[in-house]
Length: 233
Image (cartoon, rainbow, N blue to C red; front, side):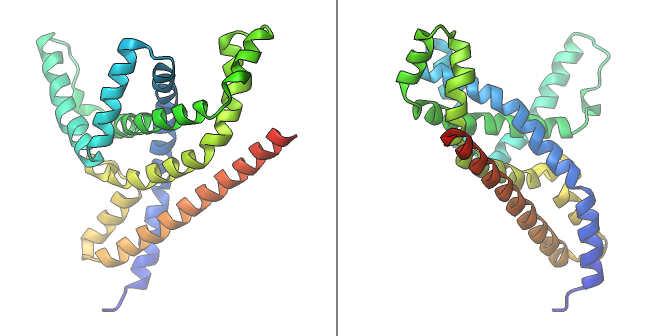
């Protein structure tokens, strides 16, 4: 089998132009997931009765189901449910006109919030409790203690796993094409469909994701070294 290298170059550039969509999904999903994950971690650490139980059920559901199923539920079931509610209230809103990237934000934020809850919980528990108690004794409030003492140290612990989670999220965004979002994968598949050059298109995607994930890992490694220097300074 001979590869069509001009097509590969063309498709690589087309997929490259869709890169901002992949980054946008990744960043928005993380921005939504981080506070929710942190909140669920605190609910578990401080044993907030009802919220802790709800968080445990949510985390079990997310971790126990494939992300493809979560996509199908959010992208297929949620709009139909919302449409039924809107019609029952006679609102003049067409939920099916909503940009499908919104569903991508929801799915990936939901999925990563559950992963981050476990990550933050273990990172916070790795910080010596005595430091929190000492901060409270010195006159800091609980919020100030977390902001100035606990979170910076927990970030050092969490960063390697956060890097792995971010890389996994970037790779999982390739499933956004199921929701008709034109990300890297969708752009390459569309180009391949004209001449059935799927092998070349998949090779382009393969190379592009390797580059993105490698650069992401380098970025986190630099952040880890910087945090480590600040900790020892």
